[in-house]
Amino acid sequence: MKSTAEVYRIDDKASFEALFHSQYSKLCGYANTFLKDADASEEIVQEVMFRIWVNRDSLDITTSVNSYLFRAVRNSCMNLVKHAGIRDKYKTWNESREPGSTMSPEDQMIVSELEQKIREAIDHLPMERRKVFVMSRYDGLTYVEIAAKLGLSVKTVENQMGRALKSLREELAEYLPWLVLFFFDIFRN
Image (cartoon, helix red, strand yellow):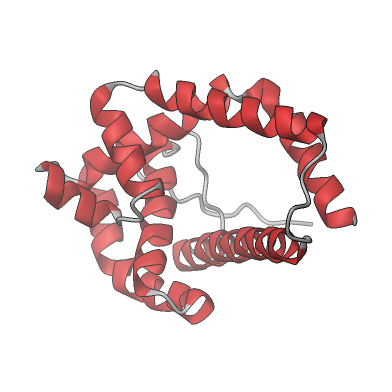
């Protein structure tokens, strides 16, 4: 029988900031043990903390806060490592193809359409949100670097990035099955 556990809640900005400042360095160090990349580690921790802040009203932490934070960072790191593995497999597959070999016309059409839809979805983002997204995903800058370049707070950058990703997920939702099938076919061969 499970006993009633105490629920930890983030009730206000001050308690969140205190949690952020007390745990940030430790969490970055922990993330770096998985990623071996300080910038990527910082971005993971910032994204975890951002998600906690955004979901604070519905988030009930019944374990220790430290355990919760470290598990969330670990899971995010594992997802990133898994994603990097998929990207590496695709790169290896792409490089191993015979020179002059091409995708099937269907695959070319799907890839071309996806690329176009992604460009259009990015173009539909509000200007500041688009800048933040491009600087993060295409230029590889951290939230701290983006904030410095645009004269914004890191929190504003995190907020804009979260909104950009949500908009893109919603706008590109109908293309997800094609993308999954395309990559499944690549890795099956």
